Length: 460
Image 1 (cartoon, helix red, strand yellow):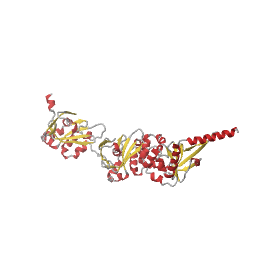
Image 2 (tube, rainbow, N blue to C red):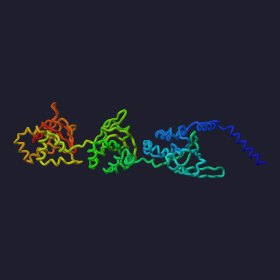
Image 3 (cartoon, one colour):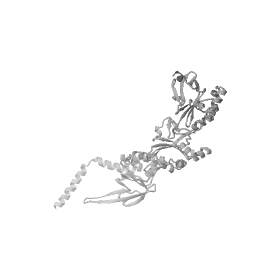
Image 4 (cartoon, rainbow, N blue to C red):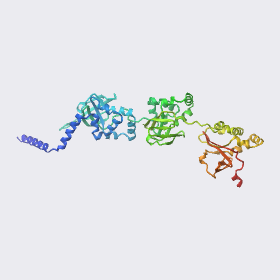
């Protein structure tokens, strides 16, 4: 009798509690029921704040319509907290690579089946990207109730059975990795992209593969497509492929230190690792780098960023000082003097460390010297060297470095710089043409042979 009264008492208490339960909970239940009957999978996710990162990813991948139109499917949906476990740089790389992102997201979808948590059990499921998902369900039993833990690969279901018109959603605490989550290096991106296969091959031939595969370097690469390489004249492409140093120089002309996204590019120049400057123009519709247009921007890699371009950035191949002198008819006599002095091999050498500035008298300057005196000078090697060294300075001095009233120290003397309405002169010899660039220095053509003593030396 006492037992019956206890049971009756518990029943009355339950009825009483139900009468006084907040109506809000009942309204939420009815809303959930309504949403599951009227919203598709994407709409259902969009209405749940804890899945906003997933919805953004689905939108970026262009999968909204595809998921909304599935007949029936089960989605294992990573929460915002699950995406937050991925390092920010890696997540940005995934969102920027549409192929990798699509592969990642479709690995979380099982098509054609509406699997509630009660039906999952222990099984292997085939995802939309044809990858395999291992599901394991562990049952827990206590004195009062039964419960279960569902794991999908290494992730745990934290919110089960979110219904939608065309499927069901299970929230999980870790993003499932189909093998594309970790961003690839610049070299790997090029090697796996069929449109960049020529670049990848040439990078390996040039011995630059380790640099573009290294996580110790942060680089920006302007990557020419296969079609861009095919536009090069056959002779140029053959020369580049057969000369390893030239190939390295050309490829380095496409590499900039640091990661520079397209939004950070500004009209101006960027310095390459080949020590050349690339002209950049940022327009409303396109970004150009030299003669090339960026056709695929901001492909993120583990060690930098890639911008795909439609032309090869062939740098201006500069002659040595001797090559430049030989190319100018007005310096023919100066070339004869160089040969007679024995200096020609010196100024024909390529060097990363030695640069020269030559103030080269033109033919008219030498013609101003009496023929007998000029003939004697060309035959006197020591005297000729002294004259020529007064026209040569260490380092690379451009016209931008000149100042009015300044004094330039050459190997054999000093040059007084004078600015006037007539132009610039050095110890009275007029500057005829400035800044002829060479690979190992710069040449300024002057209209006179510098005298043995300059004005300042005479005053001293």
